[in-house]
Image (cartoon, rainbow, N blue to C red; front, side, top):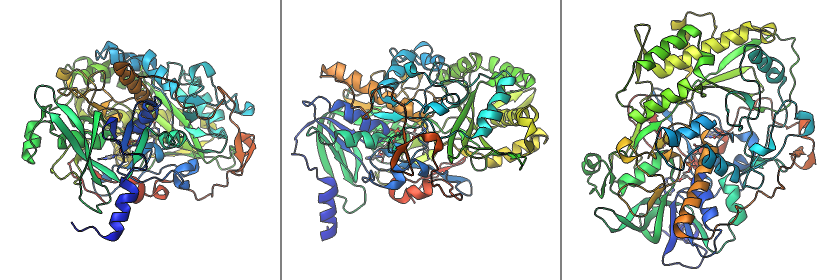
Length: 637
Ligand SMILES: Cc1cc2nc3c(=O)[nH]c(=O)nc-3n(C[C@H](O)[C@H](O)[C@H](O)COP(=O)(O)OP(=O)(O)OC[C@H]3O[C@@H](n4cnc5c(N)ncnc54)[C@H](O)[C@@H]3O)c2cc1C
């Protein structure tokens, strides 16, 4: 291809590092996203370690649509049986455009990694320690302290990601929803990082309170980009791993990439001792397959010579269903005065099955689970985990109250249906086929065959909606609900089904599990059959976290860095801080500029404000591919 003058300039500007040329890096990382960029920031603490990060997107760190928390993402509804699978394509990856909810799983959930899945060293202690190492949490302003239970000892005080609570509390949640649930025996509001994630809690956001901007992998990078041993190249799409040797254990010599904007198809090679793939749940499996790691049948079908026979690549992809096309609405008596002047709220209720199914439904579902020892398409390890979560009362359904509205979004946290993501072309610019396989697991409940994930979600949603609409004090202000909780279940199910889509919380694709159990990476994040290829991102979660995945992804990056550093005996230091003094109280700017007390802020958010993914601009910042509702169809837009 002939290079135009403009594309030569672009190539120079975006693909050539300003740092001195290095012939071989210690680490080259594919993807400057949530995990990749935090990992790079930690590894480069040691000035003797050279780190290069290759990012397909551009640098958007100065754009208000990234930094301003009020412009957090709006789900894209998709059309006609397909939907977008948005992820951030920019410095910071998806942490640059997500909803910033920053929470942890329960103790039991994280201990399962080690106790049920044999992932030695991965448990509550190690993962929550890494989570806290990544965090600086700010206490709520004193006048909000009663509504926002917070325990400083459960949070980090010096990490690079700042967390803080919302700036005001909508009284519908504190005075009606929360007391209603408590009166029915639900776990009272508490700090959800205490090892029991159950209950309705105001969860923190990854926001830096003093200037009220997004705290994310991109802002961490800003604090360390001066380092001469850390280099990030944007507009560089990794097309595969280069191999120094193949055979029983393949050894990578580096990565190769092309400009992501298509200005040229010229390939650049970079040499590195270690290769880390951090391109997220969709593209990390794609890069492995393009490099010859995967199921030989899939690779050979598109003309790629297998290097490592690992058919687990691209499996166990999960996209939990969420009723976000149109949430459930509570129609509130118009004379009610509800206050709380902040548009974005974060009242997130995580519940175990035993609490949000009727006793009859819970018993019927438990009896199906008891009698089920294998499910087609689901690894036995995943079924074992699900049973453990079910019987130990771990969170399996979430009810998200996220705006200053009486709307709630139910979310099936741990779906049994598992999907796949595979290449269907050897062209690295061709998007992989994403097949989320929604709702394919059947269950027999009381003699009737149902589609499990949606049945569970719809049953839980109806039980919860009815409970709130009919129990005081909430019942005193609710006129009706949409859909009407009194509908026969079949009609209710149909409405909920139509309102349900992607949670945008895709994880899996390269699960960390024993190889025979369906794994792609081992407990040191190393890809089976290789000497020096690692994966560090949400694709390695062995099962779907109940926590929103960002916080666990940061914890993963911290832990990965510590594992790599221990293996190489490189220097470890403390993480870059978020400029905080430990356990400081959040002070928010008034009107966007001055310091002041958060609870009295008027944000200036227009009444018609609807959110932000459209404002973030997926064309520029997002990978927009379609995932078929049932069929694998994918394409760039
Ligand atoms: C709309 C939305 C809202 C969300 N809200 C929340 C929330 O509030 N809380 C929460 O916990 N989670 C949330 N999530 C999920 C969470 O943000 C993600 O699970 C997490 O950020 C994924 O991190 P990652 O490191 O796996 O991937 P990413 O952060 O997506 O990083 C992957 C990076 O790799 C780059 N890349 C991909 N392919 C290539 C290639 N070939 N070459 C070079 N670079 C490449 C990408 O451009 C990207 O920068 C949300 C997700 C979405 C989409």
